[in-house]
Structure formats: C-alpha cells, structure tokens
Image 1 (cartoon, rainbow, N blue to C red):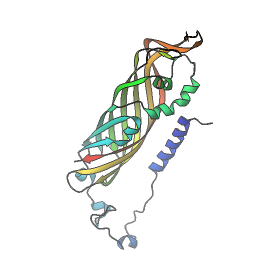
Image 2: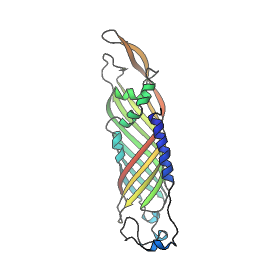
Image 3: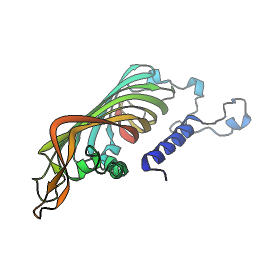
Image 4: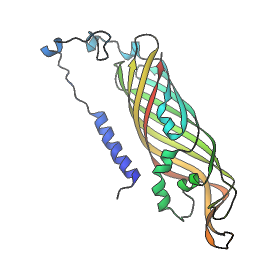
Length: 266
C-alpha cells in the first residue's frame, strides 16, 4: 500500500503535466474572432491585438510585496519581496516567524515514525509530539524566470533555497517520559523548484496580484542525535527512552509544497 509521501509525488507529477500543456487558437484570420470585441476594461482582454498589447517590459511590476497565505496552514506568518532584475528575471526574498509546530509535516511523517519505532535515534514525529514549541523563524531566497510577457497572466519558474528553525523544550522527566533532554532546535533546509501562475489586476501604478504555485525538491531536517536506552519508572518497570550528548543528526526527505500568495506591485 502506497504511503502518503509516494501519493504526494504521484499527484505532483500529474499537476506538472497539466501545468505545462495548454491549447489555444492563434489563427488571427478566423472571422469568428471579429464577431465580439471585449470592452477595454474587461478582464478577458481589450480591443488591442495580442501583438499590440503592452509587454512586461513596460507594464510588469518592478517591485512587489506579497503575503504567503498558505504559510498559515503550517503555523507560519511569511511575507515576500520581489525585485525585477531584467524583463523576464527577478529575485525574491521572504522572511517570517513561526507560531507553532508544522502540523502538515507532522502529519506527513507519521508513517515514518511507525517505521522507525525503537530505532537507533528518535524520529521527527515523536520529537514534536513530546515537546513544547518555544519560538521560530524562517527565510527564503529565490530566482524567478518568467515564461510569458503578457502582463495580466504570467507563468514562472522559481529556483529556491529556504531555511527554518524551531526552538523546542521538553517537560521535566517523569514516569514513561520518552525523551530525556532540556531543549533542542529543529532546523529544516530545503532546495527546490516551483512552477507558478501570477494574475495582475489594475491599470494604475499600484496593482494587485495573486499567485499559485507548486514546488518539489529535497529537504534536510537537523536535530540532536538521541540514543535509545532503557529506563525504569516508579514501579521499576522497564521502558524505552532517548538521551542525547548534544551531537546533531541530519536526515533527508522529499519536499513538496502548494503556495498561494497575494499582494501589491508597483
């Protein structure tokens, strides 16, 4: 039976295939094209032909600030700034704070926790479920390449590096407490690419934009190394517990994301 990670990867491939294949009519000699002309303020277009429409070099935003609304699902508050470098090239930087654990990652790695039960080190799922969140922050840097020059609707590729850190603490050791430690930090580094669509609305200097994108790549999760040992509770019954000497361990996982952002550009 396929696990959750495998299913996500299969769905991701299907999304990418649908994203990169589109069909449309480009024959300008068809008489049906002249039977209806959208008004100039219509979202479907204007009376100008595609060849005469302004390109991104004259209308595309040189700067933009957006809020990553999908980051809320992962207990983050994240904002992005984009700066145009060339006609089809820009750089983006993002920064945010964490308000809690990444429950999406916690859900996806639940199967991983079962497979690694009583292994040589603790798994990420157990680490989060047995600790308390203190604080955290995250950042991202990416290079964006636009595929289209039509201002209203843009397609793009992003090449991204992201890093996040969540500081955690553990309750005082008690009967059957599986982790014997004071605190730890969960560091997640991701390297991935995204395919996205951007819609821009407005005719003045300040314009509103919406973005949807899917991303895929790899990520590493770095925590302390926890060694399995045996402990005894108040009744002298033996149970599994984990202790650490401070040494850190990095594990590799696949990366997948679906992102929605909105904001303004000028």
